[in-house]
Length: 114
Length: 111
Image (spheres, rainbow over the protein chains, first blue to last red):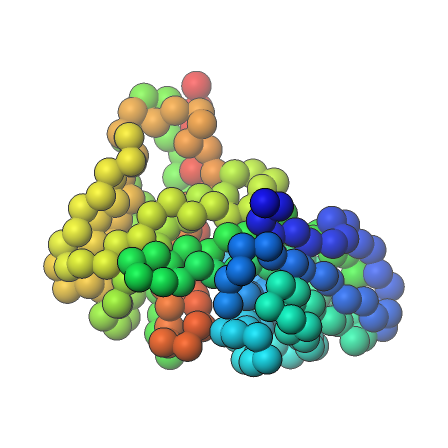
């Protein structure tokens, strides 16, 4: 089991460029999440997908789009990157059932927008 | 909307000392979770609390859920250098899957 994988690990973009962050999980979880983490601000939810075929906005969705391609994969797209989107991006999948409610995080993507 | 506050934001501890970090909510919670993130790493699930007044222990870590289910605490005894990192509380803000994390308590341990 690889758990949650994210690609790329590092990325540098110029303002206005676009890119897609990829995330995949092999734990058969229904729910997946995208967070961004900035110093002193904790983790802020960008978008989430409660199940395959559904996506919903989180706390900070502006400037991002997502696709839940299938149960395994949940991608995050920046259409026109801005310096304010410089951050560490974490994908997570959620194991929810019975008495269990746990999020498993990927290793993160460190994005710099110049 | 639901607000969750974590205090302190930063904790400097001498090795061997105890400390406590707190998570306070503006509304009653169905459950609360705690995560730990090592420097340069990703958050890792520690525990979930569900019942009012619940206390759970993991070795030197003690987690407590308040009687009114509006606050939670994490107490670490005899702090070690391996306890370095940021501790987050987290909670579901609706029944469909939306989630919120506190800002975290960054713990630095001095040998």
